[in-house]
Structures are given as C-alpha cells and as structure tokens.
Image (cartoon, rainbow, N blue to C red; front, side, top):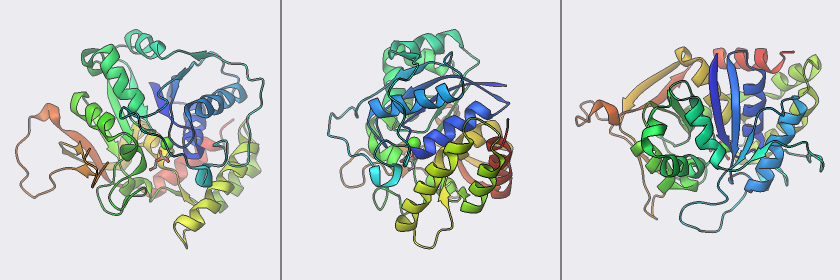
Length: 313
Ligand code: BDR
Ligand code: CA
C-alpha cells in the first residue's frame, strides 16, 4: 500500500485520477492539493471536495494550493476541454461537506509521513515548488518518490508546438522541482497521449454501476471525448494523462524508463519545453541529478487496469 499525496487541477482527467486513487486497493490517498490549471483553484477545490464527499471520505483533506504561477501572470483556463466547472456537464452541489485545509497542511502531511510518502503531481508545478520553498528542500527530499505528469520529449506539445500544458503553465516552478527534487519520475505527453480510454470502455464501466462514481464517469468522459474529437480528429476516445501517471506510480513494471537530467525551458520563445540529453553518449551527470523519463509502456496493461479499478466496488 502506497501513501499518496496528490497534487492536481481537477479538471476531467485529474478528477478521473482522484477517482482512480480512491478506488485503488494499493493507494492510501492521504490528501489532495488543488491548484489552478484546467480551472481556477477555487473550482478545483470544490471539484476535489465533491469527489471525496461522493466517496464518503471526508477524512481525506483537500488542501488549497496555488492560484497562479510564480510569474504572477494572468492564467488561461480550458472550459472547452473540461467544461465550465471542470467536470464536463456536471456542477458540484453548493453545500459540500468540506475538509478543506490551508496550504500549511502540506508541510504537516509530509512531515508526518516522512520517508514513506509518494507524491504525484498531475497539475501545474507551482504548489509543489512552493512546498520546496516553504518546507525546505531537505524535507521534500525525504519523500520516497515523486511522479510528475508533464513535459513533451517529442514534438508537438499540446499547448504550444514544443510544450505540454503542466510544464508550460509554470516552467519556473517545474524547473525548481526538477532541480531540488529527488527520485523523480516523469510521465510525459509521449506516453500519456497513448493512454486512450475509448467510448466502448466507458460504456462498459457505466453498465457495471458498481461504485459511487459510476454515474459520473460516463458524462464527464463523454464530454472530454467530444472535446478531443476537435483537438485530434479521428481519435477514438481521449488520453487519460493523469490516471496513467498514477498507474505508473503503482505499477512501474509496465513502463520503460531511461535516466537523464531534465530541465525545463523558462525562456519566452520555447517556454515549458523539456530538455534532456538523449545522445547515445550523453554528458556525465551526477546520479542524484538524474530523473527517470518514461519512454514506453504497455498499453494493454494500462487499459485492463483502468477497467478493473473503475469497476471496483
Ligand atoms: C495535462 O494538462 C492538463 O490539462 C491535464 O489535466 C493534464 O494534467 C496534459 O497536458
Ligand atoms: Ca491535470
């Protein structure tokens, strides 16, 4: 059983990631840190709270994270992909039973689970980078492992020609996390774009009606599939960027990783572009500076796992 602190910006695929984490028998979700990205921080917090309420897990705190990047610039959201409120056609109810906590709770949770914590970040990196600054790199380095959804090591990206949305959203923050963090694994767009969930898979999950999320999963993923029809014509389904990252954390044996030092471009021209030395003979780097980059995975294992977890009772 892995203790997991999940940072994200729900958003449809983050919401499916939270559901996946709640249903997974090997994940003990100890908190969700919500930040801006697909929607604003307030909406992300309401959406995460709603999912935890549906699960009957008010014991799991939702911790309010960053409202924007370190640069202070105005943020663009993505209602055309995630819906007005971030859950496709679903609007969370007004009177949520909340266990919403202030950002300082991140520090307390990391301290409490020192040495035995997995962090997964499926959103912009600002909140995680702020944890490094506020709690100190040493405490964060005691975390067992960090999994980041982000980056694009093959062009194109999804938000610009060269960059993926999470690393593009706050490249200063992502670069800081990569610089200060230890035991980091990156699940980039090259992988997540291939983690397709088809309408047929969703219909099967919906037919089971096996858990509190069954009636939610279909409408939100149907919305996401429709959005992806415009983004990538001809695609049968949509990529579950954030769930496949959680799958990688629980089941790394289905992924092929290579180790390189990764940096993120903070310049304007190619903002958010991931940089790693893929030459046959890369320059030597000290082992502690290397990050693991997923370069291949077993799609069938992902699809089977997704179906198993999403239909659990
Ligand atoms: C990532 O960006 C967000 O929009 C998605 O939720 C995902 O985490 C994909 O680039
Ligand atoms: Ca996300």
